[in-house]
Length: 179
Image (cartoon, rainbow, N blue to C red; front, side):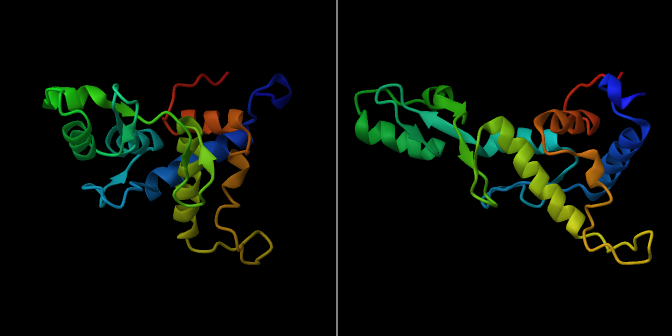
């Protein structure tokens, strides 16, 4: 494999495999909702975690009549009863109004604004950093303690989106072809 041909060298691939292995063992992904019924669950992959977040918590109920979003099914049902008393209320109506949130959202850890796709990567990296912080400090090649537990693994992940997508692919979060 040659880096000049646009592929990763063996060292980078090995570092990525190492990072994948460590993160699978650490299982850093937890639900970020304080009201989650599965708050004790630890998700095995970024994909599994974000499917939970998006499917359970990052939802809104939209009123077609006045185009207002609501944070819960109960809030939406109350809105229908008080603002649209002429509408025949049904559970099916509430279910049809439920949609995944597609607009920008704030990271619950640093409050930066992100699209749902970039929030998945951004918040996932926060969780990885927190999990890696829990590892014991390793001694470097020169015998000095390495004060950054993530530094041994950071070669595998660059800050640009292309590398992040490849890291997701290697961790099993999306399909990838490595040539």
